[in-house]
Amino acid sequence: MITVEHLTRSYGGFTAVDDVSFACRPGRVTGFLGPNGAGKTTTMRIIVGLTPATSGQALVGGHRYVDIPNPGRHVGVLLDAGAQHGGRTGREILTIGAQTMGLPSSRVEEILATVGLNEDESRRRLKHYSLGMK
Ligand SMILES: Nc1ncnc2c1ncn2[C@@H]1O[C@H](COP(=O)(O)OP(=O)(O)OP(=O)(O)O)[C@@H](O)[C@H]1O
Ligand SMILES: [Mg+2]
Image (tube, rainbow, N blue to C red; front, side):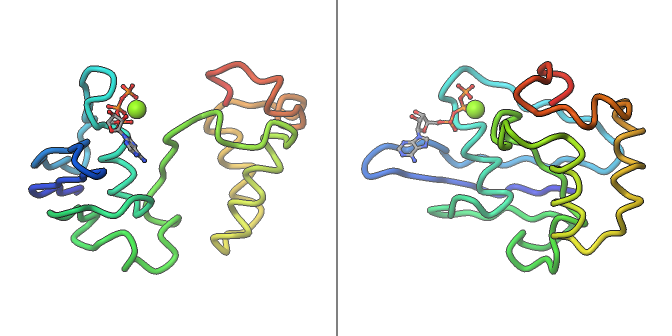
């Protein structure tokens, strides 16, 4: 469960996120829609602790993201598919993630199989991936 309560984020005199409240219930696919510049990315950055809120709060499983030990094991997030280094292979990116989170290397194989990247594709560099492969 993701709970956002009265979230507001201001930059100087400009309000990027204005008193936003919602809940994403477990087992549901939740769409987060709005015009360009509506504040969607800022809201999601606040949920995962990349941007501080001006007021209000965001909880994941009842906890603030910053209070979750080893949060990568509980929260998967990809705000920008182009944010990964283009020179790394898919396999390398997953391996770095697994090592950071203290997961066995077998998880890399499991996730490659889950997303449908074969052996050859997993060893290609991200800059040569299609959007969906990223
Ligand atoms: N660091 C920042 N400093 C100043 N203004 C910012 C900053 N980050 C975002 N904004 C402003 O906050 C508003 C919301 O931006 P945000 O990126 O959250 O929108 P969005 O809903 O994700 O838009 P899009 O659909 O285009 O991705 C925009 O007007 C943006 O210019
Ligand atoms: Mg955005």
